[in-house]
Length: 382
Image (cartoon, rainbow, N blue to C red; front, top):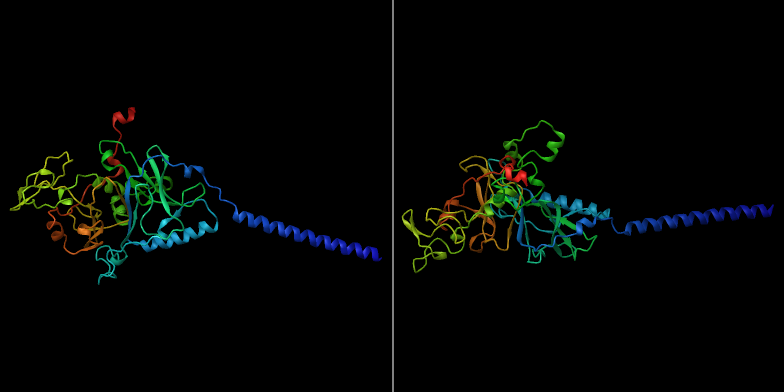
């Protein structure tokens, strides 16, 4: 009898030990799984061997605080899952708010009802190696790299640290658009585009796939995301720069202008030509070429009604410094690289601001919808 009892005790003890060992093994497996390196795609770390040529990237938004909030939520979720997928840089950078501190910052513009004080932009500045030199609070230094996506697309990403396989990476614009067919293609490429440009120039991907029969509407684009995007930015970036951007429109003491051009009479006074030395246009005192980038999404042909939507802009090391301006509701603002070293802020009188520098008033520019880019016979033959 005692032998049977002893056997039962030993059985229960054995079962208990087995359960304890199983629990310990499960805990170890779970711990190892949580510490296991994420399953990443090597394609994300096969960078193009091309020199980094971009001096800055800006992302402008009517509500940058929303981008920051979304970034914090997504990044926390990705970290919790040890996900190898992209993160968003907005969590680690503070946006510039050009209307901040103004008495009307909490007011809404009377046209589109956007709050002035909420307009902002993230500024990403780089050195020649691609290192992000703008202030940020990311866990490690960030380096810009390019990855081939398709023949005409290059992804742009920020990698933590030395970017070794498995390192966290952040999306900066979805892709470089390197080619568009037709005679106008070169004037708007390369363009650094993002998800905000999907649906800006033609039906969005979701509309094409899920809403068959739907037609593209410019008015809907105006009302939702604005008609100024990556293509319009590159078009203005590539236009010749007025010499006003370098030496001003007033002739020097010898009566000459930058580039050795002679001044001409314009509105009763001597002014310098409006084109730079490298321009293929003939210098002409009346032929001013836009010395700034106007990011306004105009709602009329005369330029009275406009706003600033969500877009990405950029400039290379070889591009001249050019102010980035726009009309937000009924107020003009300088967003980046403002003249005379001024900080981003409101332009109280756009006519005075431009006249003082000999620059033309802003006016609506072209809008580059997909239908403008049709492949020529030569393109098709290639």
